[in-house]
Amino acid sequence: MGKYFKYKLIGLALIVISMVSCDLVETAEQDASPIISPDNYPVATYTASATGTSFTEGQVLTYTIKLDKMIDRALTFSIHQTGGTALADEDFTVAESVVMQPYSKEVKIEIAFIADDFPEGEETLQLEIGILGIAERNLVNPSTVNPMNLDLKIANKNDPAKLTLVFEWPDHDVDYDIVTWSDTPENPMTEWGDGGASGNNPERDKSIEVTDPDGTYYVNIMDWDGDPFTYKFSIGHPTGTNQFIEGTFDRTTTTYINDIWTAWGDEYDSFRVLKIVKSGSNFTITKL
Image (cartoon, rainbow, N blue to C red; front, side, top):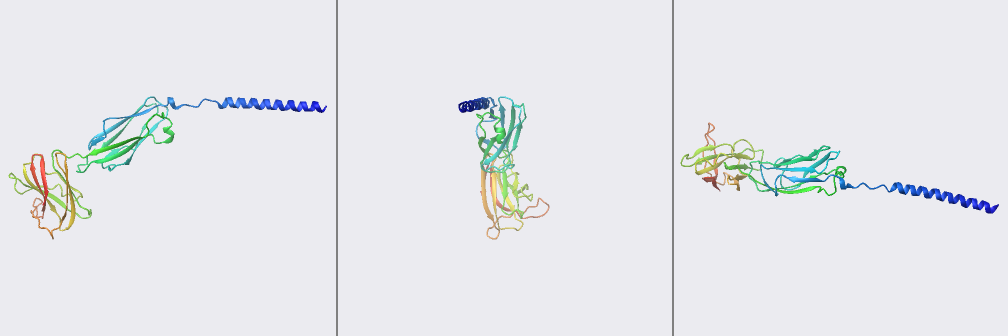
């Protein structure tokens, strides 16, 4: 009787082991589902409207972003500055992001380089374009270059028809002005331009044009008895070059030639600080 009971226990144990083994086999079969591959996910490519990395103020660079196949989800492509000397909304403008709608295959991003009419050196600009959201990034093929980094240069552009004079000083709470005089054979010591007498800092004057008579012109400061002060002229030549002249205006230590300005109906002091000799589109400018 004892042996029979032992055999029954052994049989029961074998049945339990068999059932557990079946469950394990079934579970293993369920866990072996194939892993989803991203190989069939769309690939995003970026194509520029112009080659190279050097651009000029006034140009627009367009990037066309394309998918090789549609998906049922929206994708947000963001663009932001990562470095460089260029300033947003002063030297360039660009949308922070664009959205490619579901079942679309193309979207564009424009980078506009602002022609600010301010003579300056070359600016640099580093940008990053791509799908920056982690969830959306997993919706495209891993072979997509994301993000794409741009390293650009922005060259200054001057007015080809006029001499650009920009006059600035440190204290924006004080007003100074500049006016120009002609001393050419056709117009000897004639009041010529007052575009630089607007109450702004910096002041900008473009009164001397390429088509004006050749000869000598002067740039005069109206200090309104507020000297001494330091100043800087940023000069954009029509030929495309830039010139920078800095100095200190101080009537107590320097004798300036005073040309009395009467074009506004009264007499105002204006003191010569720059001499300009014009020959066609070429200007030779010296500090007095």
